[in-house]
Amino acid sequence: MPPNLRLIATVIIAVFLRLPPLTTANHRLFREAPAFRNGISCPPPYDTSTTVHVAMTLDYSTPYLRGSVAAVLSVLQHSTCPENTAFHFFAIPNHHPHLHKTITSTFPYLHFHLYSFNPTAVSHLISSSIRRALDEPLNYARIYIADLLPSSASRIIYLDSDIIVIDDIAKLWKTNLNSHVLGAPVYCHANFSHYFTSKFWSNPSFSSTFKGRSPCYFNTGVMVIDLLEWRKQGCTQKLEYWMKIQKSYRIYELGSLPPFLLVFAGNVEEVEHRWNQHGLGGDNLEGLCRDLHTGPVSLLHWSGKGKPWLRLDAKMACTLDNLWAPYDLFRHEYLFSDS
Image 1: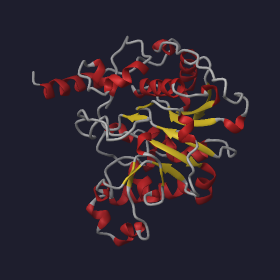
Image 2: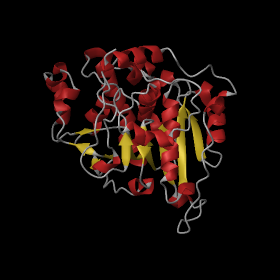
Image 3: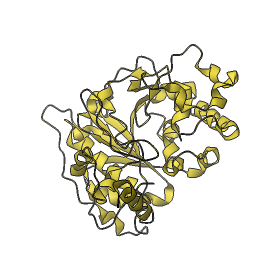
């Protein structure tokens, strides 16, 4: 069978193979991670002024949980002061008991908080996109981080589930946002117009939103966010506004990214590209192998359709997928897939 047909066949089969039913035993899907301790130069873990706060979504019913676990392990393994890192996980309420057992059995020493995200908060605003996985409500939880976290929370690093950090995340935490709401790697060489339909660009009431800005593409899978400024500027409501416009006029095709571009592009604090070597999952239709961008690397991001756990299990791994494999704590009793 030709390689492309083999990949298609593998994907079709894998789509029907999901995590097993939610039971109290499923927390044993993952091996226990080592205990990561602070270096001698670290401040004490109880010094909250030095805590690095990381936000992620957890979906117990999809293969993305496997990616999330690998991402957490990578952050801890490469942190100089891992005990000064706090994780903030967002999940749908009925998954909480299972996720709590999974987290505590896999990372017994992890400093974490589990928050409820109700899919109905956003499901009525979601429009279909070019890939089904992008339409899941949890994919939009990043819009509501400032509402879900305590009002005292002032800064957060948001990370997608398909990433691996290979540097000390405290370096990213120290990003000076210079009064911007968020910071992220920015890519001005990308064709920005492709992220919106002709209906958007031909309507001045829509396209004029970029007036006075020089918008460039940025990937929302890695963001440093000033939550105080986010709340002050009402950014959640601004993002929801564009989602409502999308429901009526179909001005974009790509999930939760375009609303962020509409609200923030041209007003983002630029972070070094090393902190989001994105696109390793290929495009959103085929998910073919890709190489790293030129330059140093602190974070690998398998954005796109091709996820490393799927390709590794199918024995069709891309070269860079082998960099993800050492962080995979899955017990390999089931085959996982991405859709």
